[in-house]
Image (tube, rainbow, N blue to C red):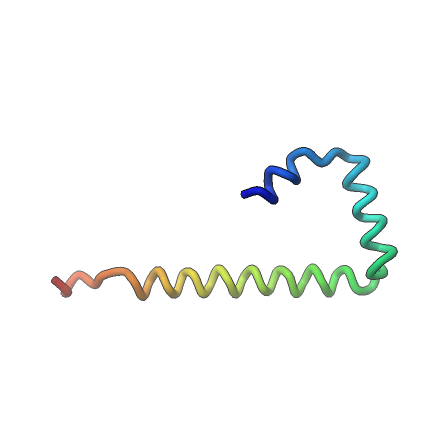
Length: 63
């Protein structure tokens, strides 16, 4: 939640500065790979939480 609040206050100039720094630090070829791996990690986390929620749900036959 805190990260979202921080991102809400970033303007266009700051966003461009962050993008330029990322390009200089990682290079243009590595950024898509990093973003893809980040997306896969988030997807795996969501799948794991869904599985846990489904596992924790009581079945209709249980009392």
